[in-house]
Amino acid sequence: MIILAIETSCDETAIALAKCQKSRFRILSNIISSQIKIHQKWGGVVPTLAKREHQKNLVPVLKRALKKAGMLVKVKDKSRAQKKKFEKFKEILTREEHLYKKLEKFLANYKKPKINSIAITIGPGLEPALWVGINFARALSYYWQLPIISVNHIEGHIFANFIREEIKIQKKDIFPAICLSVAGGHTQLILIESIGKYASRDILPSVEYKLLGETRDDAAGECFDKVAKILGLGYPGGPAIAELARRWKSEARNLLDSKRTPRRVAFEIKLPRPMIYTKDYDFSFSGLKTAVLYKVKDKRPKERKDKNFIRAMCVEVQQAIIDVLIKKTLKAAKHYKVKTILLSGGVAANKELRKQLKEKIQQEIPSTGYLMPDNQFCTDNAAMIARAACSHRKAGERKNWKGIKANANLKI
Image 1 (cartoon, rainbow, N blue to C red):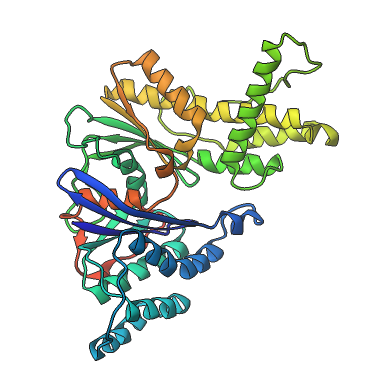
Image 2: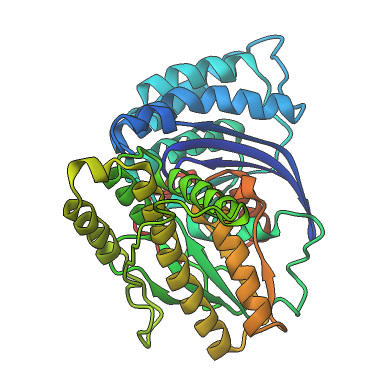
């Protein structure tokens, strides 16, 4: 079975083609068009701009994905039947005029690829962005007469852990598991009893998933972005803060190794660890962002721009977030006696988080396994959507494309 997966929940236009057969999964192509440079000058993702870019990029990304998978074949003769199809096709894309023109031209010139299903992210995410991908999938489903599989974006991130072929998710020694799903739009702790069953005719998964806790305000990734803005580091904030923290630690080690005593090796910065000792599994990072703002305001204008101050702040902010994430995750893992801890989401690409989580698991609960996605599958991509769809292809398929709708606040 070959699945065409589409992901447009935020600012990445992504399409993947994957082959799944029983427990095996192989990526044929995985193409991503990033909008980071477009949103940088605004300091964050602008939904209307994201929608426009998805409209512009979906067809070119589809062509690249099909070409890489060896499935892009030109049509030799155009039949009248095709022209009749375009009437209904235009109705589906009535709100996506720019996309309609591009897709009409593409479908008129290329053959239907040998695929069996279309998988589409329906939420959570930015609603304008989600709808572009959904309407694109609906149009392809209608024109190519293919079933659609609806996929929850957060579950896609969870399944990023199972993209590698050597991992067999059917093994009983993986579940129950705890997943720390941490990104710009969400921070959640999810208990997974098992994977692979959807409630009948609905995208919402059955009780195999249990949401233990989530952020009450800012998500971890959102906190990184807002702190980066306060420090003048630009967008996206996570990678910028991580890099400056790495440099500061590296320089501090070099100074200590050389036995030199600098005038100021480090600023004395101590930030709160919000909700780290609460009995629940919820998170809150808004207060951390506010604490950074006050620390910056307390400094004189010249000190605020001091590279050592900024780097030291990056180290402390990153560590504060990591401390809370790890403390809550291990607490949940011990309480529920899980066999595996999973990490997922865009912030899962943070090297310090990956390193420290692994070390803490080995120190405190060495009998517990852990899985982390390859870095390329941490941020939004369509391969993870294809992987989730592969496991739900029977229960999650819907032949009626009309019933597919966006849900910006979809829960796991």
